[in-house]
Length: 532
Image 1 (cartoon, helix red, strand yellow):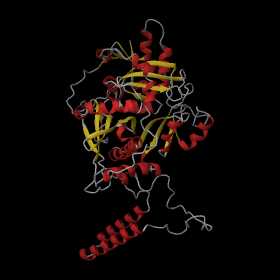
Image 2 (image 1 turned 60 degrees about the vertical axis):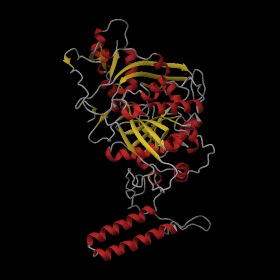
Image 3 (image 1 turned 30 degrees about the vertical axis):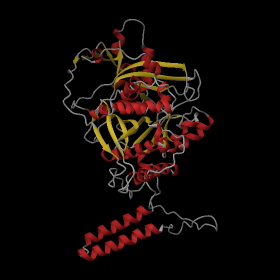
Image 4 (image 1 turned 120 degrees about the horizontal axis):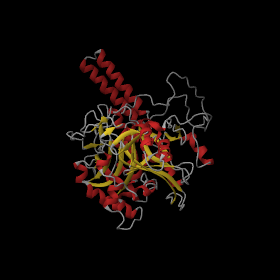
């Protein structure tokens, strides 16, 4: 069970204000002046489980605004995309970026030609969907949001003082470290590979048609030399130690382990956690600091981080010097409704909102804004120093966040996905997210995940698609009983059925119905819908 930091046993309740639909405003993807349609709500507070369930229904946050595109009406449908981090294998282009970073760190020389435009930072347009909610930012006092009773009968205990300390900072993933902090067993079968018991017959190829797959694969001379050296070392150890059966078994396993590694494709960790020469030209360190509530490390680096964001917006997005204000930066990238929570089987840093800072030679060159949730790491935004654009930091940071997800999985087994925001097939520049395989898209009608390979042919024919091809399938999480929606009214928690009976003035049932249908039955019964 998740627990709020400093409040053992207490599960905080999400409090939201539903803002309704916004139709006919400008789209940053297709430049349509009145084509975008989305729903939004202002989240005063939210548990990480609530947000996990919401993004699994197509919602996404920008600061404290949580919004959902109305998929069958908006001009550019935005499909939630997730990468299966545990099965991820970097492509050739991904390896090129990782190698470029290693070369830069170790030797300092790397081509500064313009990098490929594959940013993991194009979420800025997503935030536009929340503008209408920001303009009507909530001015409700904190006292109105604090429940005093439930259903007019049950008293709610007053909030205890926060005596616990949130773990503020975790330094992880040092490139210069020779001892990787992300541990992966390369010898475990990869899901999706053919079973070892399955007989696979390869016919010898015709001349000029490639390698003979019925024969052992060719091996590099370097790998063969390593294996011979290891065999000689093991033989010497066996002679010295007497070669007990236990020692012999261990050595055979070590030798087999070495053999299997030489034939396996390189993982992200093989590029990230490598021993660098003593005379390496640069030092790169990745730090994860909690942004909400702000840790001491976050506060200490706030100004430096903001200056990187300001330069990024001015150079990359052509913002005027007066636009990227501290207030906008704080509201958009620092504020978060997510409660800091910890669990015995969760990640050491806890759950919630964080900034993943990339420090090069003692200064921040990039920051990835992320949410750590029960089942995933969710990428929110990336900004970086434009002077380092040649390092393809958008791609590099995405790969590091996938590696970070795999690291967290070691402690939190349920956490195994990397959410990349929205995939927008109708906008060619936003298709790059589909290159992180294997990945899935969320069906906009049944909210089930579908492999992207099955989705792309459908999207070629229509920008809006139902991916679930079982036409009898329905949204299993749909609203079934509107009366069970939880409402916070006059500091009292009650079901909507009770609130509706005592409500004066025009009916708000249509608005509540719309809200409940979008968030689903589970979240509508767990979150508190504020009613004035």
